[in-house]
Structure formats: structure tokens, C-alpha cells
Length: 351
Image 1 (cartoon, rainbow, N blue to C red):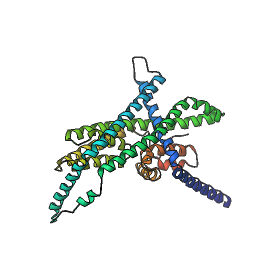
Image 2: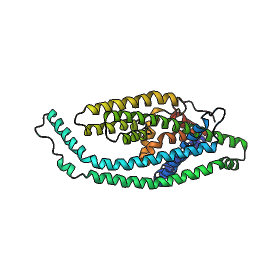
Image 3: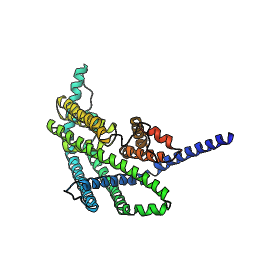
Image 4: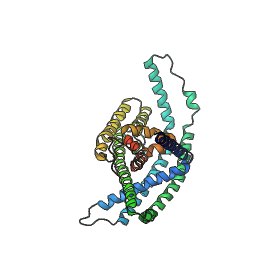
């Protein structure tokens, strides 16, 4: 009995050490691991797009896989080019419009002070005098250029992943000569690939839809930089819960400082809020179904955990990373209880 207790204590202590070392590796090696993780997600996106192009019916004919992948790569590259042009154009426009926004903020504060009964509004002129918004816009542009440079490394990783994916099966056969073990590992990798590709495809589609409809709302109201905010809403939609809230608040705040009355603020707040609610809480769950099977509480906790480890990139990748962890945990008997806790309904697919 004492030997069993001792063995369990040793196993528990070993697990704690492994978890601690894993977190140390994730934190200390994030400069190396983050580009690789982003590259893997883009690789999944490319494969999901290629599969979608391949499934397009052309009579009894379907596009060959290599043509479908070529179209997927062209689609992503064109999208990245449009994004880069959109960001560079809007940085200059924000810099030019900044003085007008500052004047509107002063007017809003004066009105709010009158409503609150203050005899004199707070003096914010000196505060704004110390803030050079044009300089901030220029710094943002430099940061964007730095991100573009690091993104070049990501694209190189993606390129090599595409080159390597044809040889994955050969390497799997070499690593696992036993057919049973190879079948188990192939099933594990297949589950992981299917669920991540499903998530990336559905999330991308709903994010595009959210960004386009939100752009329409902003354009109808007359909010500045509607195209830019539509793109930002599209990006933020990848971050669970928090991203949707930020996608509502940021454009609404711009409407508040752009227009002399708060009417447009409430229109934007309500319009985009309804869009986010309908797509995020009605359409997306219907499309996703139970394919991911992750507890909503686990999603929030993973958002906080990966955000604290890898920052904003961790927030974007928290759901795929949690799906991968849950599938791996479900593969081993000792860690299956962890996978059950991470799941939404306690049901884990058999090995």
C-alpha cells in the first residue's frame, strides 16, 4: 500500500515538474515559439482554404489539390497586401484628423461638466499639450513595420511547412514501424488537424461576416476610417469574448469623439453590439456545433493564461492551443481526466 502511495506521489511530483518546465519553456522561448505557432495556424488556414476550393463542385470535376492550394496561397497573399495598404493609408489619415478629435473631446468634457454641475470643466488642454498624437501615430507605424519584418519570418516557416507536409506520412511510417502505434498516432494527428481546421475556417468566415456588416453600420453612420475599423473588428473577433467587446467599444468611442452629439455613439454601440451578439451567440455556435467541445469557462481561463504568457498573440491562439492540449491529454490514460475537465460535456473521443 505504501509503495502504491509513494509511486503516485512520485508520479504527481513528476507531473508538476513537467508542467512547470513547460511553462518556463513557453515564457522564455516565446520569441522563437510565437512565430512558429502563428505559422502553424496560417498553415492550417491555407489547408482549410485549399480544401474549400477543392470541394467546389464544377460539374463532376473538382480542382486538383495543387491548384486548390495555389489559389489558397494567392488568396492569403492578396489579403495580406490589402491589409498592409489599408493600415498604411489609415495611419496618415488618423494623424491628420487627430487635432479635430482633441477639440471634440474638449467639447464633450465641457458638456459633461455642465451636466454634472461643475462651475468650470477640468483643464485638459495642458494634458493634451503634452501628448503628440502625430508622434504616436508615427511610432505606431514603426511598430507596424517591425511587425511586418517579424511576419516575414512567419511566412518563411509557412513556406517550409508547405514543402514538408507531403513527407509527413513517410516520416510517420519511419517513426512508428508498428502499424498499430502508427494508426493511433495518425488518428491523433487527424483529429487535431480536423478540429483546428474546422475552428479556423468557421472563425474566419464569421469574422469576415462580422467585419463586413460592422463596416456597413459604420459607413452608414459616417464614422471615419470605416474600412479600417471593419478590419480591426475582423481581427478582434478571433479573441474570444474580450475581442468582441473591444470590437464594439473602440468604434463607438471614435464615434463619440468624432461627432458633436452622442446620438451616433449610441447607434454604433447598439448596431455593432447586435451584430456581434447574433453572429457570436447564434450563428457561430450553430456552425461549430460540438466539434470543439470545449467548456466556455475553460475558454475564458485559457484566454487569460495564454494572454499572460504570449500576450496578444496568445489571446488569438488560445482556443487552437487549448484544443491541441485537450486532444493530447485525451490520448494518454493518466491525463484523460484533464481532457475531461477541459471538455464541454465530459465526453472524450476514444483513442
